[in-house]
Image 1: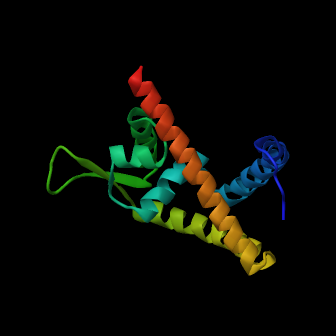
Image 2: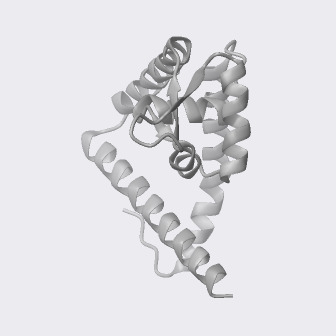
Length: 159
């Protein structure tokens, strides 16, 4: 078990690990998008819509961490590529929702299958307790990042 006596010890180890981890993740992302003629940002939007089809532009922009204007431009490109379509909301005509087309769904499924293969390989090489620790740790990191982001937004609003 690692023993971090202070935050500096943690930071030093994490700064050694982080570039290697990012390199691996970026390399794997390039592999999973190989031959698909789609950018990481575009596939991210498709994968979010695969999980939550029919999001409003505001909801989608929040999920992909883009300003609504940037998300709108991204969706414009995805519409031109026949990967998503916009439809008015049945209950409120002012609201526009974004849906995957059948082609967008096929592409999202293909990327999910490629990722499943990668993570199945990772899981097979980890002990069950390592898998649990990894998931708990990544969730903790995401929680802290979300807290920091919320605090930063609150501080921005105060100024």
